[in-house]
Image 1: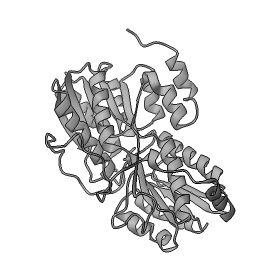
Image 2: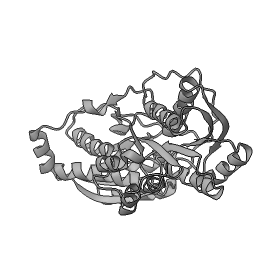
Image 3: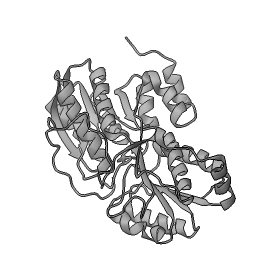
Length: 379
């Protein structure tokens, strides 16, 4: 994601890839080709990687005044160890910082792994030298992270994950909980955005994350299912998976060559969509609209300039960071925390860019975006 993200969420992240991404690469196992999806229940609720039921974020209570005072007096410390960097991660950090400041918890280490599992292991080792009480993180690779975070587990550090878990780790034992977006609803929201973008009918390309990664797989599958089940006048005429974010430009270029009548392209996350937009610009195809996930300043600028980027579904990273910090404090107090917590879905289009930034970054968009928004789109 500008974000070199995601959340290939990861996140998606994202990646473990080689995935939130995710909003989200790294080193995940190859996934099978995108499955047919008529059998997917669009009314199903998102569940955790181990089948944990989701708890809506509004059911997570705040700490009482006495509990806040107790946390403040304990002089706890925290580390923020993200998988990548960019707008989405900045929003996560801002939410966590606000909550930690309220609770008197000092942040003693910060790092981003650039989606490199080995680098994330080093980040953990470096952070552990500061003896944090809490680590908030997005694991780059669910398998490699089991070893990388073991020193923190053994030391009793309270681990809280965003978007993705770690293979073999159990909530309430090795980690506190996973906080993430409602993946299924995000997929359906992206499908609605695509329908809006192309007027409810037409031909689209589908560029999905071709690795076994919990967050992106969920979002991809539910987008495809929603298109097939809810929008019969939209036809997916080209499908291609990717594991390397930088490959999406050539994938999109090939799709355009094979299907010059494309009206839209779906991409598994925002940073990966940047390559697709580059391919469309090179081809002079201002008419093809792109839909993806996650907050991303680069794509927001294209959106503000009335370019190819039509909209994204996103998972409120600012709120996620805030809740991650809060439940970490609750866990330090010995309070029970639900294992899988989801935040509501938002959608961002040109009309809502400023609002989304206010809610998720607690700031205005960059001036370049604001300047672009001041000019109306050509009719």
